[in-house]
Amino acid sequence: MHAIISHPLFAPVLITLALIAAVPLVAGYLSLVERKVLADFQVRLGPMRVGPHGFLQPIADAVKLLIKEDIIPSDSDKAIFWFAPCVSTCAALTAFSVLPFARNIAVADVNVGLLVVSSMSSVGILGIILGGWSSNSHYSLLGALRSAAQLVSYEVALAFALLSGVMAAGTLSMQGIVKAQLEHGVWGVFANYGFMIVPFAVYIIAATAETNRAPFDMPEAESELVAGFHTEYSGFRFALYFLAEYANVFVVAAVAVTLFLGGWLRPFPGVSWLAVPLNYGFPAVLLGGSGLLTLTLVRKLKDPLQQKVLVFLAVTLAILGAVFLVPAVNGAVAGLFWFLFKVSCLIYVQIWFRGTFPRFRYDQLMNIGWKIAIPVGMAAVLINALLGMISRA
Amino acid sequence: MPREYLPILIFLAIAIAFPVAAIAAARLIRPAAPFRTKLEAYECGIKAASDSRGRYTVRFYIIAILFVIFDVETIFLFPWAVRYKQLGWFGVAEVAVFLAILAVGYVWAFKKGALEWV
Image (cartoon, rainbow over all chains, first blue to last red; front, side, top):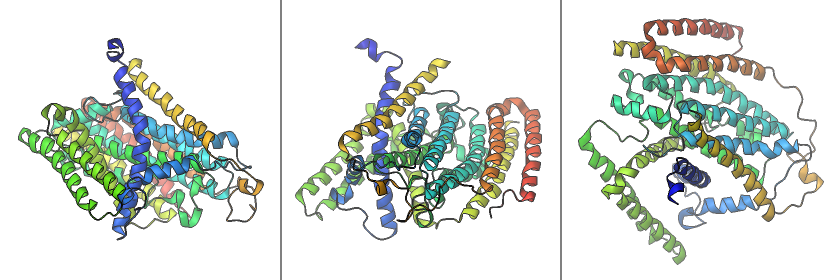
């Protein structure tokens, strides 16, 4: 037993299994969060039926997709149709292998970690093209073509924004980027006299386009293309595309957090007296407060079973908050908390975009990509180089 | 060095196995009752008028070619971006020249209307 635990591959494999199990769950709950937040923007309730306040909706959705009939159109390329969604899912999942969740929590810390993430996002495009092409349907093909053109256009802008981030950190290793920000005592987004905010803005715009989300959700513009590249997909294969999309939303937010927002560092990592209020107080108040607010909702529910589920949820949140007050545990989980908290904030911003901005027309989308994002990204690289050289001298 | 990549390979293997196994497992519990009209490609309820794999606009090819040029460019810049402080002003000047040459190509494509989407 001891030989297994002390094996160098034990921790990575354990984290791998935990991630592969957790990502589908997280993706499902992201969809619930998105529906709830959008509902709130539009002054309605969102899903309320399954579980208290729709809490078990993602589970019900997953079961429904699992037992749906899997239709493979007779004109399609069966083999490609079969594995295209697997390509997308596999690429989206593999990007998680280099994300630095905390100081010691990462499957692998390789010296080209950032390139692994961006190459995986490129492979994900293949899944979309293959799926749209193999369906042999007009809507699917048009959706796949649009999707591919959009993704490759914004990939260039994304790469320029990443370049600026790499220049500020001086390394491609994901853990190294976070540690460089700890050494500099400032988050990447405020480096170089605050100029890094420009590549950060380019990154957020390009990343929203890369994940096919509103206002750049051309590939699945419902009013024009039915459902875009996955029109012909049903049942569990559709679920895989869905999973890949939400996993990608998490990945782009996590990369932004790592490069620009300090990864698992707390705010003001250089100011030591803030350690207690930020590492102990903030998570405990946030999670404990959420638990208390959840408790106030219990009285309004009529069904006793739903009340019990909600009380269970509230108590779990409160216990999670209390865990942060134990000093021995806090050191291990504070970094993880800050990473996930920042990622959640960025995902909320992406949902906010969707609730606020109307969809672009396709030519407008291409104009933003090629005529604004790419030149600005390219110029930002040069200006960053000049500022970096001046601050070195 | 290759040892560091072993966990990623293991992750990749499990990430491939997960969707394949899930689809295979779902086959055991899902219904399968296909008939001809159900298996037709979706076309708003009418029969598909033509095969979908016809000709499509040349814009997509232009975008693809431009993408290859600019993506290779960014790949060239990554090694420099990591070490640019050690390479000094000479490195910055070289990259500025490199970017200037690409900017000329970009302006040319712009003037030719390759970036216009009609």
